[in-house]
Image (cartoon, rainbow over all chains, first blue to last red; front, side):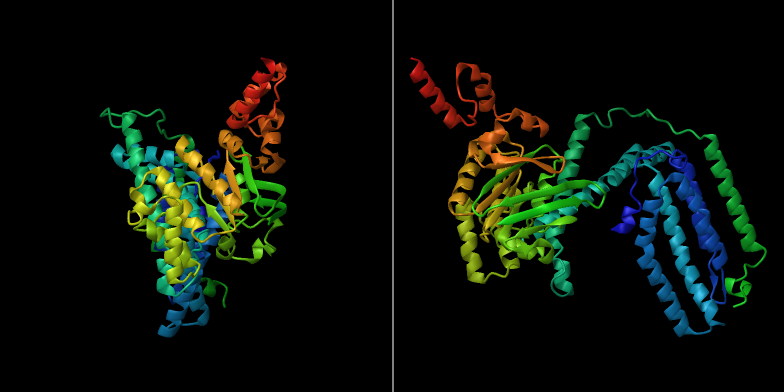
Length: 268
Length: 273
């Protein structure tokens, strides 16, 4: 659950929170593309650019004041990162054909860090963008309103469902349910008493919500207007320019000089 | 006996819900925990069966420290009926629903059968034995939830907001039912805002506000103390409001329920005529 904890939005104001969600999304996409571009091969791992990508995002975290939440999402991702590292390391080791042990280590580390950078950028995006803004951004990019509404509602109900799941778990524990008891099949079966009430309540709630929406004239007008309209500010343009520059630089580095492995640079 | 010794509790999101709470609940006692929303009532009772473990201090149930026992072990003694029955009902029939906890506690097959029949009769649910709990009305679902806890015959029964969404008839039945449990020697703890219900039941009251216990005492003492109740955002029961308003006539002010009010007024009229 802690990974999701790192994605949960808290309403605070900071220069990063005030950025246009579309621009932030563009920035995240650029980071995503760059991250995928680097990684290298077993005998020429590219750890250096990934380290740069990891640290380049720290100023954003600090400016947004979401250090704790960010750290929590990093901790939440730690298990998967360790898994990716171990997986790459073990299988590449078995497969052989690596030039040196240091390169093998660097390669596995690069693969794990690549995942961590992806988690980091998405975590920053979701930590600093309110669901309302996200919906607004979707709407202004001409996604039909029904879809935007469904999306924002779904996002908004995640914490409600999480809380409800906790209550249901408590209620069933109080009736002697022990989730950790029994063999593998039994353990899966143990979740039935949690899932059924959760699903039934979610369906009930969605029907109630639909009725409430309809009684408030949802969909009465074809053309809907918004109280808040997203407009690009100077800071948004700066981020767009920065993102484009980063992309250009990355493409340049990718195409022209080969990135030396850290192992070679440090002469290990 | 439940002993709460200087317990503080902080939720993972840093909300401090309880602040140095100490309380003793004797066997066979009937206690109502009252207070405004967010006063920490539910947080406190969730410590009684180990659903929450204190951040500071300790909770001891029948000599067992709750941090040293699982929820399942503690629940065998302390039955907890949640506010919303929809958070626990999941079986295909009412009968299975009641049997669920019994199976978890490892009762034998024929004991389970006996207990289920007993609980169905107790709460007048026999005719719904093979009905899906999801087809029942709100009040009936609440009764199924109650039956599913009483079935394993716990010593202590905790009812979280038992009167919410219940009509007067159901409330009267619930009151009679609680009285029945008390005469059987059970300890009953209710968490509620419903002053009128509490005034009619006449339990010991624990009044809470902002994660602390404001006062403990009989229903008469607490429910006629306007100063205390205001601090916990609770209004006096209607009968108490009338009697405090009529204090100048020489009527007693510590009258809280209808039955007693009627008697006091009849006596008063007799004396004055």
